Length: 264
Image 1 (spheres, one colour):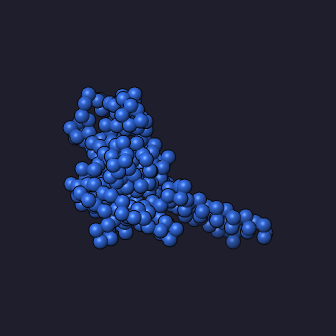
Image 2 (image 1 turned 90 degrees about the horizontal axis):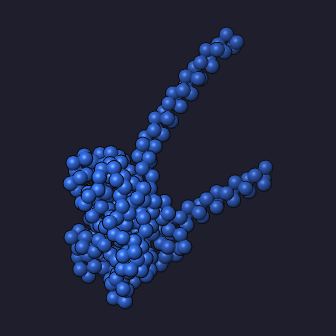
Image 3 (image 1 turned 60 degrees about the horizontal axis):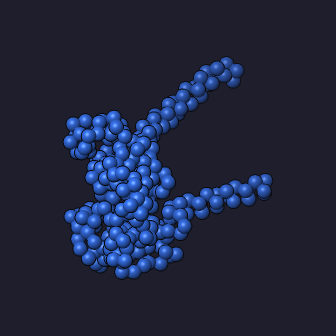
């Protein structure tokens, strides 16, 4: 019995340590916690709009189809064609970039990866922090860098929305751990904390910092949806399944009492 108790404690400890490492994005990275609502269709629709306008020109989502996205996100087909399809794609086509891989490799040094499963390869918290952690870096070939992914080849595609920010310092990662997104969305004086880095906005963008964080939450939500489109239905089906099993349990208990009434 004592050995079993020790085994349970060891397993629980391992699970806690593992989940903490995952929340931090792995390798000791400090990330902000994103608060997504997968049932918020408005958030998913805005995320799809941002993805198509700012991501799809370089990155593919080759495991997603335009009509499946429109159906799951309650987007009418006419809006899909007007706002999310800009070239010669058809409704049933896969969401692929038109940029040739060889050209992308020549321009960026590496071909931009497909983003269909990025939310499963990386955690949503990591994605949310990464999208907000770009800063100006004149020593970089693209002129940009990222505090969460140093020396990344990707330039800041959404700088016109966020503006231009620069690093002014670091926070103590050991004492902070994962920083809550609501707290990091607020400026500390003229500064803002993203992950374990303190930024200063030198040139504002089209959106305020709070509005930009909300947009990146929407984009992260959409990327999480793309990684598992069935989750929108799976969670609803799960609720109905649990409710059915509870009702079935009650009926089974009543039936058992009816069978054993004469015996007792």
